[in-house]
Amino acid sequence: MSESSHNKLLHHIATAFGLLFLAGYYLVMDKSGFYDWVTAQLPAEYSGSGLMLGIMIAMTPGFFIWKHYNRWVEKKLGVTGTYYEDGFYKDPEKPKDKKTD
Image 1 (cartoon, one colour):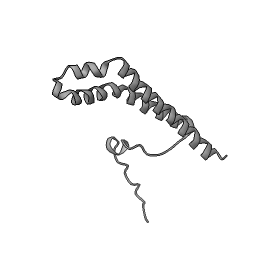
Image 2 (cartoon, rainbow, N blue to C red):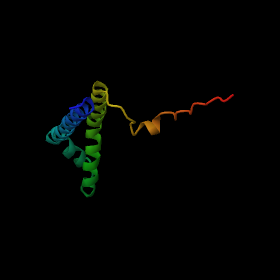
Image 3 (spheres, rainbow, N blue to C red):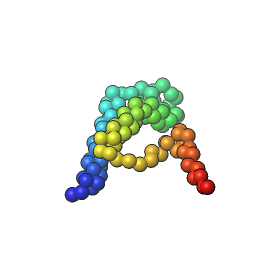
Image 4 (cartoon, helix red, strand yellow):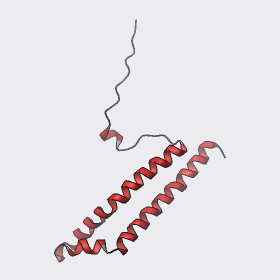
C-alpha cells in the first residue's frame, strides 16, 4: 500500500470517527432534554421551528469541535487541499507578476 493510499484510508477512518462523535453528541443533547426545553419555550404551533432552533444551537459547539478535529487530522496526515470557507474569508491571492525584459 502506497503512502498516499495509506493516508487516504487513515483520513477516511478518522472522518468516520468524527461523524460518530457528531452523532453521539446529538444523542447526548437529545437525552439531556435540551431540544424539548427549547421547543417548550415557543408556542405549540411553532414546535417544529423550536426543534430546528434547538438543534442549531446545540450542534454549533459540536461542529466547531468537528472543524478543529478535521484540521488536526489533516495536519497530522499531511492532507492538503483548499477549504471551502477559505474562498469567503481569505483575501484572494494576487497573481505573481512576470517581468519581461
